[in-house]
Amino acid sequence: MIADQASTLRALRKKEQNLVTGSDSLIKPRDYSIRQQGIRVISVTSGKGGVGKTNIAANLAYLLSRLNKKTLVLDADVGLANIDVILGINSQYNLYHVLKGEKSLSETLINGPGGIKVLPSASGIPEMTDLSRGEKLTLIDELNTLNEALDFMIIDTGAGISSNVMYFNMAAKEIIVVTSPEPTALTDAYALIKVLYQRHAKKRFRLLVNMARNPSEAKEIYERLSQATGHFLNLTIEYLGYVLLDEKVKDAIRQQKAFAEVYPNCSATKCLAKIADKLSSETQEEDESGSINFFWDSIIGKDCRQK
Ligand SMILES: Nc1ncnc2c1ncn2[C@@H]1O[C@H](COP(=O)(O)OP(=O)(O)OP(=O)(O)O)[C@@H](O)[C@H]1O
Ligand SMILES: [Mg+2]
Image 1: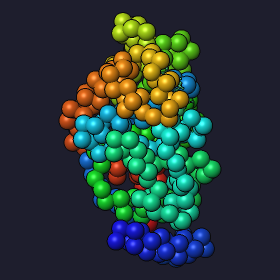
Image 2 (image 1 turned 90 degrees about the vertical axis):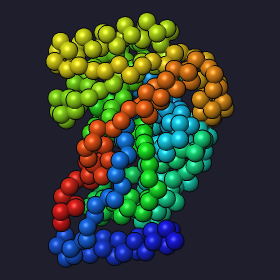
Image 3 (image 1 turned 60 degrees about the horizontal axis):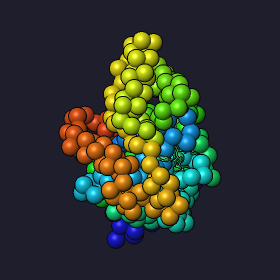
Image 4 (image 1 turned 180 degrees about the vertical axis):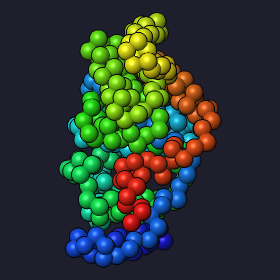
């Protein structure tokens, strides 16, 4: 029934796109609002690559799901070590197929461990910022067919300050900045926060120190970064927590499994479970900006809805 609805919508959308290609004002699209509300959209991001974002995003999603939170992981990185690879799941389709009207969003979602849903990386498609208006409209339609309410959407972004990374971070209400204790990771985390704060008016950042050797090393890293943001940007950042350096993480990657699933008692899992508990027990601030509505508005641009 949902698939039927989706294919009808796709057919209509294709027709509409053809019209739109000719002239923007030929048709007056209907209401494009996304009907889902209440979802928490959290990006997992970093200045420097290789600090553990993908592993944190996938395992955090897994642990949230274990807490009975319906969770979707959106792989917004076009790199190689993607969520589907580390979780050993096959992704035949991705956002590209949705945008081309070949598949519905629900056909594209993959079931991951512990009941999580995974929206695979959109590798092979143009930068999200370069999507055509027709593609953006297709995306909204598809999102409207996702009638399953979600509690969390975790976005695994690429590293750095490229437009794609900025885009997804702008769209998420909550930003988790991941750093390792390495000095270069720390300076790159600072650079990322600076750009998001100064150019994109983001104000809330939570730091997760990954691959820490002990809790005090992690706290010290947080203190250093928070002193820098306080001093140079007049910005306070929050400490979300740490995940210890743990060989079991690498073992799990080799097995293409979530470490939290195969090693539920390892130190990395215990650390991340505390973070998942913290996130899931928070009450969401009552404003629209955490909803999927805001998320896709930010990506697509409000102009699409108004026309
Ligand atoms: N807590 C940890 N303990 C030990 N090793 C870890 C831990 N977290 C990550 N790693 C190691 O770091 C590597 C990089 O992790 P991951 O791919 O998640 O980083 P990333 O930030 O997503 O990288 P990229 O920027 O390339 O997307 C992993 O392959 C793993 O070997
Ligand atoms: Mg990654």
